Length: 342
Image 1 (cartoon, rainbow, N blue to C red):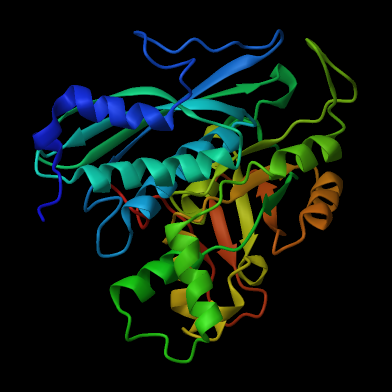
Image 2: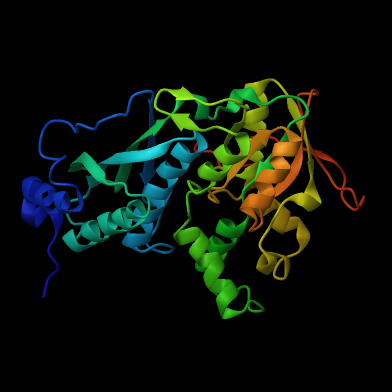
């Protein structure tokens, strides 16, 4: 029996099927109408994901591809301090893509979104020679809670909210199943899951506001208000560190031994490639935050689970990686070694 293709049912029927993944009271018009509370800022972010660039049948099921796409956008909202309201999905498909594949893609997106009480609130489909997924996510944030890259100050501690290198390790296991033979089944599964089903760190935000002493009462935050800078590490830890420093006009000193990497990774590959994956592997979707040292210490204690202070903001405009053991020479982190589209 032949599987039903997108070209067999046409655009209108495909849209009708995909609307089942959206709230009926929101979709169906020319635009989604979503209420914003008084004293809230709207945050909008867009990601474009392309088959064989951001996802592949070799490494992800349609559900996993959908999950990763949604998680990437939710991570961008978390990096701004925003809570999600909804997403719209622009989908480019070849006509011979199966309807089942498309519905499974949407099921993966909704499975991720439902964890955060968020929905697909609209979108579009079109014919394309390459499967392309363009997601726009909408979030809201109180003015006192906006996280920006440009507000790091000299003396700030640099916090990462979890391990780095796990997603890159999982990708390696998916592309080369023969490697990592010394890993247990649980370790292997955890690394693969980190790649296929990353978790956006929206859970960090309530703890961060608690530590910073920010409470919200309609349009006016309570005092005291403390500054925090940051972004997510979706393009790699080194990328996040350099971009924050460039935006803030500062530098940083990072201690290599403080960078949290999965224990399984330490037992599998030598320290040099493990460090490379942690710095430049990308797609770990952790937050990198810069805040006063005393508050950073409290935040790390509250987060637990491999959160760590990895360095300090400095005035020298370079991001220097040091090894206090003296085994490895200092190096300057750059944007050129991570993933670049062009």
